[in-house]
Each structure stands twice: as C-alpha cells, then as structure tokens.
Image (cartoon, rainbow over all chains, first blue to last red; front, side, top):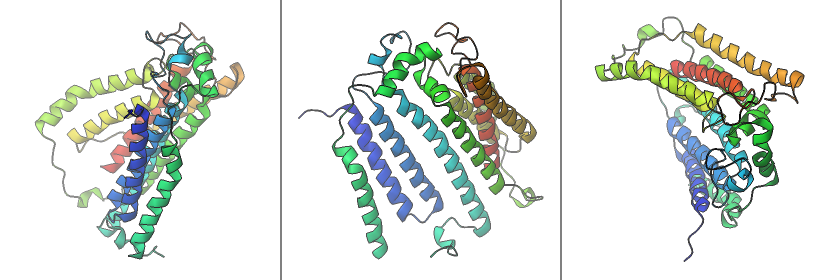
Length: 123
Length: 227
C-alpha cells in the first residue's frame, strides 16, 4: 500500500471538520454550541486552503539561511493561500466576536441560551 | 423526523460539493504562475524576506485594508451590542478577586507579553508573524490583566486614540504610495535597505506596526466588552 501524500490528510481532516461543524450548527439547540459549529467550519476551510497551497517537499515561504533568494521559486510552497488564510482567520475572529456578543445579549434578555426560546422570528 | 431527513440531505449534498476536490486531489508539484512570480520577483521587488508578508501587505494590500475594516466594524458591533447602561454594574453579583498566583504572574508576565507582541509585529517582514499576530498577542496580555484584576478600568479613550490614529496612518501611508511610488499601499516609498535586516522592505514594517497597534487596541476593546 502506497502512503498518501501528507497534504491529503490535512485536506481530509479539513473537509471532515467542515461537515462536523455544519452538523453541529444544524442540530444543536444551544447558541454557544452553534457558534462552536461555525468555528469548526471556519477551521476546516482554513485547513483545506492550506492543504491546496502545499507543494510536494517544499518549505515555508520565508527566505532565510535555508532558502536563498535565487532558488526561492523552486523551494517554497505557494504563499497566496497562506496570505488568504491569514485574512480568513481575522475575519472569522470578527464574525465569532459579533456572534458571541449576540449570544450574550440574548442571554441577558431571556436568561436562556436555547434557540427554542427565540421563537418569534421562526417561520 | 422530516427535519432530521433534511439535515442528513444537507450534509450529503455538502459532502458531494467537496467530493470532487477530495477524490481527485493530487498534491501540487509546482507553483502556480502567480505564486512563481511572487516567489521569484517578490524578494527583489519589495525586499521582504517573509513572502507571505509581501503578499499580505503589498501585493494584496487592499485585501488587508478591507480585513482591518471588517475587524473594526465587528469591534464596533460588539461595542454596540454589549454597551453598558447606567447603573447596570450595580445589579451584577460582585466578582471574586483573582488568586495571588494569577495576580503575581500577571504583573510578571504583562511587560513580557507586550514586548513579545511588539517583537512579532516589528519583525513581520522577516519571520513568521506580523501585525495581526502581534496585535492578538498584545490583546492576550490585556486578557491576562482583566483576569487578574477584574475591576481594572481599561482606558477607552486611550484605546480609541491608538486605534483611530494607527488606522488613519495606515491609509495615509497607502495614499503616499500613490504619490511617491507605483500605487496605493506600495511599500517602496522608503529605501528597501539591506535584505533580511530589521530596517528593510520599505514601508512594510511601518505598516505592520500600525496594523499591530490597531488590531491590539481593537481586540482589547472587544475583550473588555465581554467581561
């Protein structure tokens, strides 16, 4: 049996996290758990993006003693997905902060974190 | 029962969306053309040793400006949702003071945490790290302070001043790029310096210092709202 390349495992874990997170968001009643589901989807997407940016046998896109300027194009992985994931992490943080703030104000208003207690807006 | 069926269907359909990516995945053996350009020309063009930084701050600097804006809006949203009304603190139960271990550790670690945060964003063009990471480390120092001293008053005026001044300077440097160099957020408004040293990569360290201060103060304000 040939072993799979390392980024396959990262990709598969990321996709599994996306599905677990989506399942959590759809089935859980507790608002905090739904937010955790969102965070899992977020992390899963980051892992998928990083896995796609990996190039076999290469190293981090930083030039130092190990990677010289002239052979950077042959030695480093794709820097673009890393940069996009950096952006995505910060945006995810912002979204999570706003969701948690909503959870806190819902809890203040209704003394409950269950989504079933917020039934006015249900169709 | 029907609801469960729909949830199951949604999960299956989502898995189907990604199945092509997962099943036909094969690791890349070469960079894409764009990445090739960034890796081959980036260090010469911009002088940053960390290629991710050169992509984040300069090649896709506009994305980063948008990202900073999103973070600002979410901090403002948290502030709006969790604003304190007059006399609200009075009916909350009194907070227990932190143990002596936490208090002593906080006093000992706070300066080091702040120093490490500054180190991370000042060296963002050389080593892994940058404005966002350094800002998050600074905010973790503020979190430690809030844990150790639950009644500490965080100066919102100071946070607001740091945040708006650094945000303004960031955009100002971006506009200077149009006047003095190739375009908005071009880092070559200053000499590129010696490759791989602290004073290199043109305006990238300056931009990352402002981003770090802005992110640090925004996240500190968010943490203060949540306590």
